[in-house]
Structures are given as C-alpha cells and as structure tokens.
Image (tube, rainbow, N blue to C red; front, side):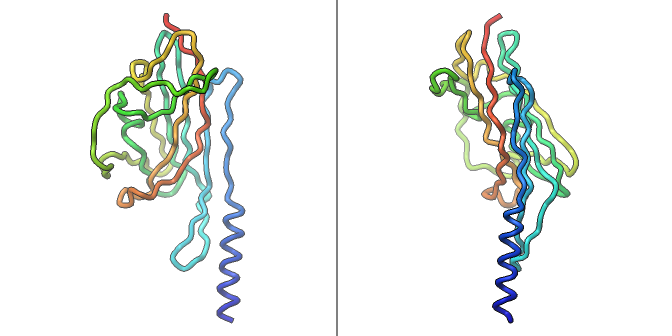
Length: 189
C-alpha cells in the first residue's frame, strides 16, 4: 500500500508538471511594443506533493531608439502572493556597469561590443536585489547609448535574460522568466 501511495504521489507530481502553463512572448510588427512573458510555476514541498502557483511574474522589455539614444525600458509585475526580488542593476539603477543585455547586429548576428564602465565586484548579496511586493510592479529606464558600440543606421537585437529570486536568503535559486528579444534601429539625430 505504501508503494502505491508513493507511485500515486509521483504520478500526481508529473501530471501537475505537465500542466505547467507558460505564456509565450509576442511582439508587434513595429517591434517597439513591450513584450511580456509569464510563467506559472509548479513546485513541490518536502513531502513530494505538487503545489501550483497560479499567479505569475512577468517582465516587459521595450527599447526606445529615438532622438539618437537607446533607452531600455523594463518592467516587472509580481502576480504572486509573495514578494519577489529582482536585480537593482536593471530595475533601479540609471546606468549599467557591466554587460547586462545581449546586443547583436541583426543583419550579421555579430555581438556588439560593450564599451561602458566595468566595475569589478564580488559575489551578489541580498543588497543587490530589490523587493517587488505581491500584486505590485516596478519599472525602470536605462540609457545604454554610451554602453554599447552602436553604429548609425544599423538594426540591432537586444535580449535580456529575465529572472527573479523568491528568497534573497537563497541567492543561487533563481526563477527564469522568458523575455522575447526586441529589434530596433539606431539613428543619430
């Protein structure tokens, strides 16, 4: 009987994982509309039973490449019942100090050089993250014009590896959030 109860728990856990829903990212034809992605997480407690978090954490990414600048607009929405923690480097700071975004030349696929300031730092600590309370959102804009070697008239693709922490006491346990890449053309005024 004990073996069949364990088997039933395993089947329920696998069924719950199979039901894990994912909201796919979409972009408009002009590639300037914010892109949104969300995940519904299935986790297990230490007894092997499935717990489904039907709420989600969404991150939006938009690039404004007007006026000779490249401004990245980021937003995180916490639809869960608990606070989540995101990096201050992109959700609070107004300047980046390392390659936070993957930028490539859309035509060639070549990676664009990061030419902004580089700050040598130690391992991440809880002070490197900001809390987003349940049901709240946080938005930030970062001008990256001087951080990457942009060439006028060139079309680029920018990617951000979205993620968050559920607990700042566990800095090595991140939850990914799929964020679709954004395409933009850099033009000098």
